Length: 224
Image 1 (cartoon, helix red, strand yellow):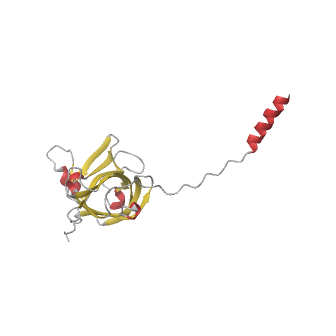
Image 2 (spheres, helix red, strand yellow):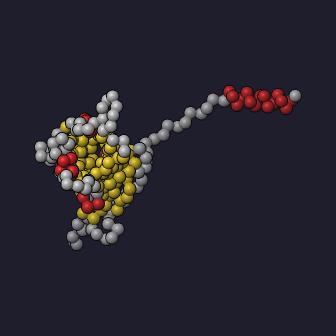
Image 3 (cartoon, one colour):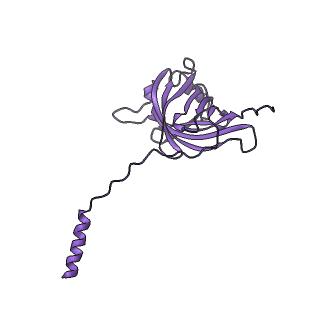
């Protein structure tokens, strides 16, 4: 009986113990980046934009946009204070379509990107929030067909070099980014599925970005 009373008392004490509050977590600590702060230019030969849309429920149709340029103002001490601007040529669509039609040009025309009237898609970052040691969430103004809406991308920092690993006189930064937009927000309503159901090309568009930025090495100080 004595043992039973002791066990009951311990159980009661355990039930009465209040959980200790967890200490609030601070902001993520960014990884150390061995690359200088300053202005970087997008390297179009090592960058890509892939766009995917659900195609009649059969597959996710995929295309690329290739006419890329941009600038990164990088803050190595506080990456959340960095800023990005990007420009994509509206007439740089590449698809896998094979046939008599010029399908790339059709997607560039007025029903879709309207490249003749709006030759560029642009993005200007407005805020960056760190979500992990090498990840963040970047929000900015995305303009397509002359229409601007906020867009958000989940960004991963991949690698940085103070000097190119092959010895070239430049610093490098590499990132991956993912986001989604609704094409109807930008006036692209061709083949949208009906609200009542039915086949079509999805309103939601996935955007996948791989990009590298370069900064020429600072000139050496002249010998005194």
